[in-house]
Amino acid sequence: MSEVDAGPRGEVGKSDDLVEMERNIRRLQEQAKDLNHTRHALEGDIRALRKKATRLEDEIAHLKSPPMIVGTLQDMLGPRTAIVKSSNGTVFQVAVNERLDADKLRPGARVAMNQDSLAIIELLHDAWDPMVSGAEMIEAPNISYADVAGLDEEINLVKEAVELPLNNPTLFTKVGVTPPKGVLLVGPPGCGKTLLAKAVANSTEATFIRMVGSELAQKYIGEGGRLVRELFALAKEKAPSIIFLDEIDAIGAKRLDGSTSGDREVQRTLMQLLAELDGFDQLDDVKIVAATNRPDILDDALLRPGRFDRVIEIGLPKDEGRKAILNLHLSGMSTRRVDVGSIVGSTKGFSGAELAATCVEAGMIAIRDGRGQVRQQDLKDAVAKIAEKRAHAGARKDPTHLYA
Image 1 (cartoon, rainbow, N blue to C red):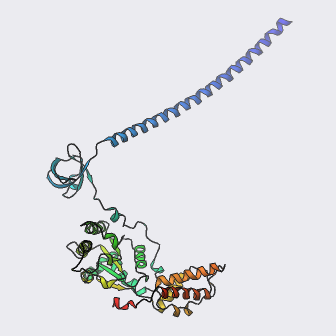
Image 2 (cartoon, rainbow, N blue to C red; image 1 turned 120 degrees about the vertical axis):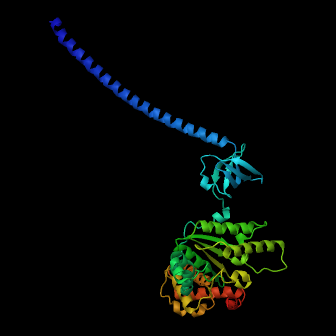
Image 3 (cartoon, rainbow, N blue to C red; image 1 turned 135 degrees about the vertical axis):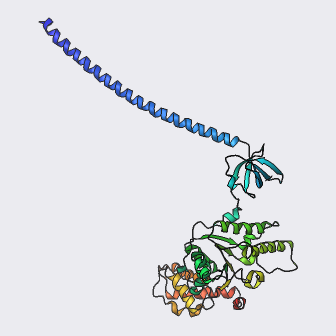
């Protein structure tokens, strides 16, 4: 009986071993798949690391390569032979790399030469002074013509002289007149000259380049003239463009006989500016906007027709202008029962900047009292405070005779 029962139990035990063996085989197969995937991922990482290592080796080799000499191309003697002037002033006859475009190899071009053979290896772009290249305005200011209150007539004059020749030059050709080269904005400080220039930069699609006159006054001989020359060269390359020269009286003062060496260098800068404004080169797509609060000291050659064809006076705002400026600044403030017309008369003689300061002072008075709105009395107190500051600063002479 025991022998008969042994057979079935052996078969059952053998089937359990087979099941366990199959389970182990499946587990090993899954592990093999996982290992295979891991191997592929590691191989991909190795290929990426090899590419990175190769790139780094190439970069190291490039950094270890000898430096090149920067020179100026003087003349082309043939398709692959040229005369160059190195940075130290020596002139050489050298070979030219065959891969360089022969049409771009013109006299005056900046080139990079091999340190050993002095052969021309690369053609370099024109270099601009960092002060000149940084003068180009990339992002337009957030000041529009709507933010310039009380200067409607002046805005129209600027549009006619600056924007219209750039946007519709055929109109001037049809009439047969030469469009104005630029405008000169004159007026007391704080009356909106620079603000108007910002509005021009915001409204036009032309390249806007701004420079302060004092930045063109340099220490060494010829540096100021070079900056002016590069400034106009950049404007011509980026045309249509507008150049804004703020505080032009820094370099545009009258030339006197008795002057120091520094004054003579400033005069050289002025003469370069005069040559660029009305020289041999035409400024068809380049317009100039300049601003100053001292037109009485400007040189006569700078004011003559042909350089600044239109002189726009931006004087102290009148009653309507002051009211428009106050309404503009108060429109963005939280106010309560404010009558602007009743305080306009007490702001006679205020500039646009002083009117803006009046609104800010009224807001500060409300904040000091713990209120969230500006009242009529706050404006009256602010006007009195600004008027007191003007009185303590000294009685200003009437500047109208400067802009007659």
